[in-house]
Length: 507
Image (tube, rainbow, N blue to C red; front, side, top):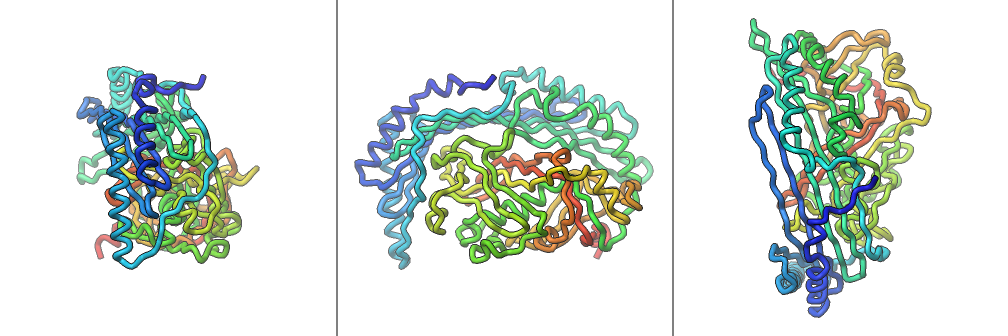
């Protein structure tokens, strides 16, 4: 049964605040104005070796007014929930736009802010897909489950320490603009994680093994049976950790790789997700983490990867961390192609960037992480599509004579243009004669984005598809954090360079 918006959020004076702010912006000559109330509640629990080691539960509540006035942006925010205060904040936003227009003119620029058209969506309500709001579950029950899982791991031979965390978020947004769109939304997400650590008594060497369960736009049911097999994963971790601790170092060289979706999602995030943000491609996002090699002049021609590569941007995927009903500019959620048949065919857009680049409409990628921040272009759920009727992971492995099978994300590094990178994994298995032949250590795969995706020979079927993701994708200055998911199947890559990281560190 679908959930309804939290009544305590609906009890706030949402419409009176919006009416006052938008009316004031109109009276001051704004060409466009939008008003946004945000309430974000975030909580975390942390256990060390089965004992509580920290907890937090915070709520951030406020509102923001953004305007286009005289062809310039203006923005202001407030926390006083009265119509008079909202009107004053709108006046401050217009004053900021006037100042911005003068600064822009003094710099010799005649660029004006214009927004791509968007249909008016009336009064819309949207709630994400979940069964049990984690904030309805007592903290004692949450802590008890994490403690029980930690104890299970600690009771296994070879496990010396266990860290357990649970992060939960409920995000409420109310949006209204001068065109007539009004949206009220609620999203729930959570991220449970356990890490087991083993220490060799003779040498002091240590290794860790983390659960692979990704963060998800789900509720408490994610930890109690829906969406992930926790029993199986917890049972396997001690043996996997022990094998990893005694595993030999990898021999550097070129290998065929079968990459599990629990690892590949992060490579997608860094080398495709960020690289296809159009503000980067146009040079409007350059300071925080660079631009992109996938420049706008290459749209429709850049060979991103092999012809089996099909990547979508999606704000509609069920349980996706970047899934919404409407973005923070009142744009309805959509799904679209970014890479089709290996060629760059699309970007992620907000309304200003869409109009600037000649697109008829935004695809709904504006997001602000709080009322105190202005919406910026943020990542959708960017996902590699599986092959209909495609092979199982075991079949992909069977097609490799000498290679590696990579599982789980770990560390990563990529340059500012999202082109040269290296990634590691939770664990890597040697593949010999189409069979797994034990774990290896000290490995990283290194490539350029186009070489890596160009080497992709096969993708798995829908049965191999898993949606990974992150709670804390960073962008903008001041910095903002956004949650985003990336789905993908297992995939086979030929001739990828593997580094021995221990040797590299010793150079």
